[in-house]
Length: 233
Image (cartoon, rainbow, N blue to C red):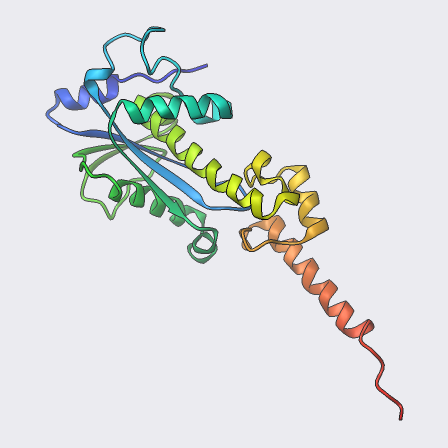
């Protein structure tokens, strides 16, 4: 398992940048719910030079490698030891309108705009820059496994999105959003086939679109073949 370091941020500060942030998003692949991004500015004085079990950030890593209980614990540590953090949420409706790629960039931009402290350098997970921002940026492939502030952002974003999915579960308990978090698991797909598409699903995503088409066909069938016969009197 790879663990991120703070050396990337330290290098940028040595180059003269005062406030270095990391940004990441979660929720591109799910077929329901929003895409969520976070930006985190870590406090350099709380990091230190070497990873050790006595350091608060010892277990911080890519959110995909952390279970839900540990993610919540780590996010508490992150929020206690960061200068600032921001979270950006883009709804499933907007995802359907502008596509998931554009929605993920928008979520990242929103997360930066939520900061009270404006960074002068931004590390991004992936290959794309946020062209609408004037901040100096560096996208890094697998940045959430390499750069501590990006890993922290991935955890904050994941916990924020999971909270939304738990709220969705309260409204639609039969879909199991609290377990699969909107991803297209077999249980989720079976629930879609059985119960239909909810207002929280991404209607342009393949399996959801197929379910909508099936529902429309069934409704047309019912209208044609199950309609009451006209009165003969």
